[in-house]
Image 1: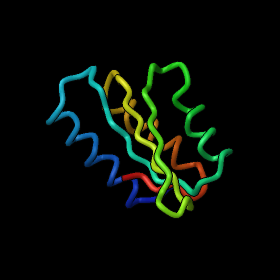
Image 2 (image 1 turned 180 degrees about the horizontal axis):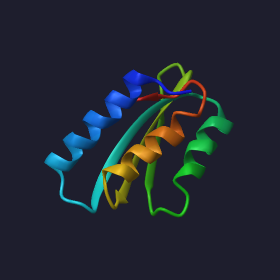
Image 3 (image 1 turned 90 degrees about the vertical axis):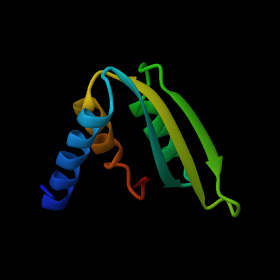
Image 4 (image 1 turned 90 degrees about the horizontal axis):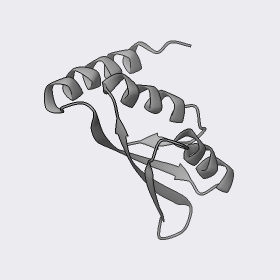
Length: 95
């Protein structure tokens, strides 16, 4: 299912990344996900074998977990590709 607003978002993100970064570059993703080990594991698996550094921190009540993922990527298309893959995980919020 295509979402025009997300297409527009990714187009603007790509333009911004091309303008502000030299590639390849480290990119920091921040995600908020319900504290569910299978959802966290799914996101970690997406970044397997990329050399990504993943830090997680539970919210004060433990209901949510924030994930910070730093990974070196070749270009803005790679950044967007990972955003789209993580977006398939139910309940995830990309910051």
